[in-house]
Image 1 (cartoon, helix red, strand yellow):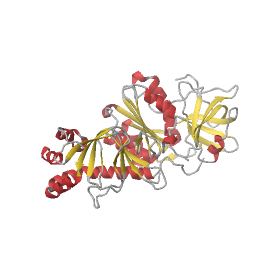
Image 2 (cartoon, rainbow over the protein chains, first blue to last red):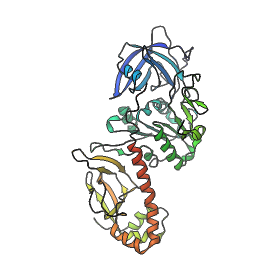
Image 3 (cartoon, each protein chain N blue to C red):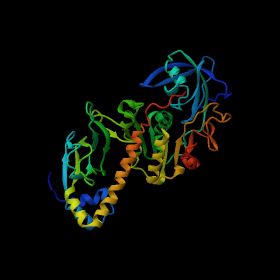
Image 4 (cartoon, rainbow over the protein chains, first blue to last red):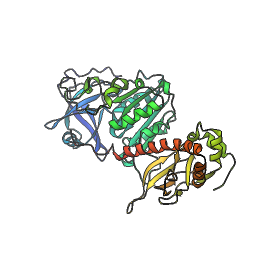
Length: 281
Length: 159
């Protein structure tokens, strides 16, 4: 990890310049940010997020999707789903946005050493997990099996497709992709991503699972992992709620007794199992 | 379709029959045969008589819906150690989807007429088969429901 310090005032957005902006999918894009002249970068850990501020429009929480070992190359992958993210989709090289962070709990990448690791993700959920994957691959010798199970809507909606193909080409990890529907031009898996779990081979007593995706997908993934013999305390999920202050003051992202921005977004599943299926939360 | 030796062993080794008594397995094996499909070969069409069900030994089978005016849509893929074809259990015994080999695929094919006859005669054997089939059907139903939710589709617009 980099020795760079975290930013000081958590409520004060710092200006960051867009070094590069590119489209990932029809509604999804990535921004590579660098600090404005004179400003410092900061260290972060896989799974953390930043609050990105589009001046004059608003602020949104976005997971960091780059490599935490290279914190100066700060990458965020964003899906245009509303006013702020729509505006961000129009940003180009040289434009400036505000940034606060990093916030939240990370994936427990160091604690997983010696274990098999199963990563289950779908849609844009791969973005918050990519820094963890980079860490695992950079420290490959410290882990047992590494299995990545990724689900997308159609073959055209596969995020980071080139990287998934590259990872799949390695001899030391297993990558399976499934789509919800496809035509004859797709020769891969079709079906929901939790179905891939029963086909994966790992040692359930010595496996840690990381999950990020739509909550209903995480719900069925946890079920499938439990059936495969992985206990809740070895399952970590990244939750998404309406984060505003990102420091646990405003209560917008309250999740039972937790604040997702401060106590999460990454939770050990046994800590939230009781509230995970409560509809009102 | 060619009958070959060793079907007993193939059934015994297939996860669907795990833990099944040798006597029942023997009865089922009497209705079994071996089949091989090349990549892209149709195994059955929607509306065909559902007179077989299939155990995948190796390969991949796609479950497809034919939508008039559109290209076929693959709804699911079935892999090594899994089964497909449940229309043989319920009248009118017609397949409800197309099945196609995505790659070279080896199957154990079970003759549904033969099985239905034996199940009618031997209720214990019938129960044994159904208690294995029903969880597969339930799992497929749950998966289909989850697919219908279109969880990766455009979310409610927000920030």
